[in-house]
Length: 140
Image (cartoon, rainbow, N blue to C red; front, side, top):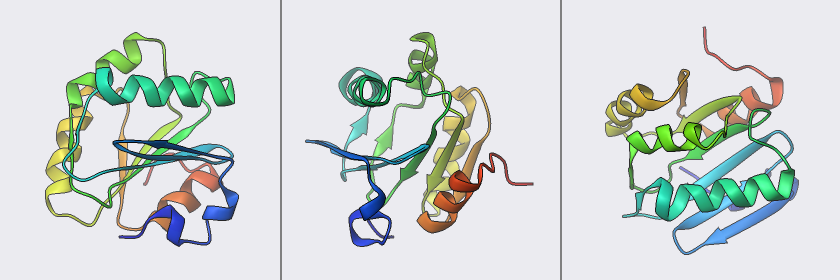
């Protein structure tokens, strides 16, 4: 797995948000997050801050954005917190997870229980970005 900073995608970054718990890269039409190892990602401590910063920068509720979680590190997601995301009137055009970890498939199933549409899984960051750029939302 490779970080956005180590790819030819990096010059396309419109804004980079750096937090103590990870980095978020804003592109035209999509966002890529890279959370640090060992973090227990929650709405209250992490998600709300990320969403508010992206929303403020782009002036959007997220309904026009693809969110790509580039899981280059091992961390936990409070899947039930997706309910808080939607309760606060935020949306996503699509949600992609990039991971090569076998345990990520189980995590994806759990997150799918609380996310209001299908989550797409990719083994490659470039594949996910290409799908986001082409506007492909679901894998047939």
